[in-house]
Length: 395
Image (cartoon, rainbow, N blue to C red; front, side):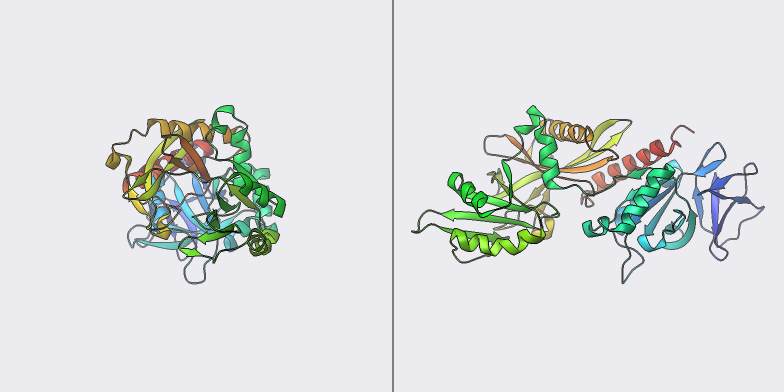
C-alpha cells in the first residue's frame, strides 16, 4: 500500500484500503487524490496497522538536522522501502514523553530529508552516538518506556570491552582467542604485568574507532629499564615505571583502563592488518553480511581508516575467510547468551604469525563499512530484522 505525507498539515493519508487503518498509532485518513507535493512511501498492512515505522534514535547536531552517517541512513531507507515501511531519523530532542515523536523521512523526489510526525514507532533502532548520552537519565527513561510499552529497542546500548572479554572467556573454546587482558587498577598491577611482558596495549573500556588505545614498550637496552608510551605516531620520552604510572593516573581516575597483551599480526607490505566482520541476527541465527580487511597506516598500531588504514578484501590476499567468519559467529552466539536485544555487531579479528585468530573488539554500533557490497547486504539484512521484530514480515 502507498501512504502520503502532507508536509503543510503534518498528517499521513492514503487513497486505498479499508476504514480505520492507523500508522504510528494514529489514524491514517483516506482521501480521493493526494496533493502532488506530498512524498509517498510503500508500507505493509498488519491487521489494521500500516507500517512498520522504524525510528533511528540518534542525537541532535548543531549544524545539521541530526547526527550520524547520511549514507547509511539513505541505504537503510531504500532497504526498508523495498520491503515496505517508513524509516525516520529521530534526534533525541524530538521524542515526547509518551514516545510519540517527529523524525526526518527521506523524500526521494528531492533527495532530501523532511521533518514528519511519525507518531509512536513500531521499533526503535539505537544509534545514539555517544556513551555519555546513554548514561543520562533521559536516555534511561526512553529505554525503559520502550520496554514497558513493548516497542522493540534494537541494540539497546554500547558494549564495554571489559564486559565483552569476560563473557567470551566463559567459553572454553573462545577463551583461547582472547588476548590476555587485565584491568589496570593499581601500580602493582602495572608492575606485575611488565615482569612478564615487554609490551602492552592499554585500552579504554569505553573506547571505539581506535581511540583510547595506547602502546607501552619496555626497553631492556637501558639501565635502569625505561618505558615508552605511544599513541599512534606520538611517543613520550623514556619513562620510569613510576613516571608511566603517574602519567596514567589522571586517566584512570575518570576511566576504566585495560592492559592487553600485544599480538604480532600478519603484515602486508610491512603493515599489520586485521579483519572486520559485520554480523546480523535473523530469525535467531547470526549470519555474516561481509568481511573486510583493514591495514594499519605507516608506523601505526591500529588498523582504523581514521588513522591512515587501507581497505582490502580477503580475495585480494587469497584468504579463505571461512574460519574467520565461523569464529565471529561463535563470539556473537556467546554474547547472546548473556546480552539480549542485540541484532547487529561488528567484530575485529586478527591473525598472528602462527595463523591463530584473536578477537580484539566487538561493536554494537558499527561504523558504515566502506565496501559498497557490504553496505547493501548489511542494509538489506537490517530491513529484514526490522520486519521480523515488528511482526510485519509475513504479511
